[in-house]
Amino acid sequence: MVRGALAALALLALLGGCDGPWSEDRSRIETARDFPPADRPVAPTVSTKWSTEEARDRVNEAEDVMDSADVRPGMTVADIGAGDGYYTVRLAQRVGPGGRVLAQDIIPEVIERLADRVARERLDNVSLKLGAVDDPRLPAASFDRVFMVHMYHEIGEPYAFLWRLRPALREGGQVIVVDGDRPIAQHGTPFRLLVCEFEAVGYKLVSYDDKQHAGGYLARFVPEGDRPAPDAIKVCDNP
Image (cartoon, rainbow, N blue to C red; front, side, top):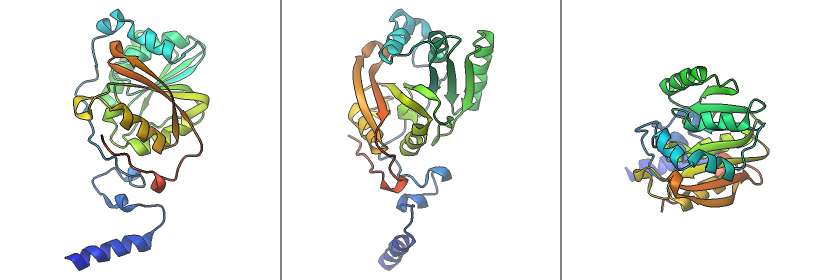
């Protein structure tokens, strides 16, 4: 049994190339196997709503978050994990007719419901996109801001996802993450882990804001340096 395990390890070493040993994990989506798996759990999607829209508006959540993210008229913004469209609708109003919002989710039924809302509210500056667990599938060099609100802890392949997200940013573009500083099992992302995973793929933290009325913190990231090769990404420890 030991000899068999040693032989398998030797074979992996001989194969070399871009694939790490994680590429043999058949339980993962094939397109993510060039990337390391995250050393942490993934929170299940239990609801597309973090809270009611009325309750969120009472504390001025979206307006405050958009102000902190410096979202301005004419910008192009992506709303990743858009769900029922709380931020999609408000981002569309903020960027105005000269801007664009792309609302993305990985659940087809959610996209269908959001499409109905976009049509009903006549949001002509909003388009929709079905993403994947390891790829947001965003067009390159297209976005001034990419929002990820209360959904980062649900990303099953964070290293592949963030790596493939980076080219979608325009010069000066930023990724905006809103999440709770708590364990992933409690539907949050420990802030230290969030920063580590972003840095592992070639982003830099530029600001942190306490946003308890929005359920936790707001972190802004920008690309820095070159993207690492997938097999050079160092996995972060789950605190």
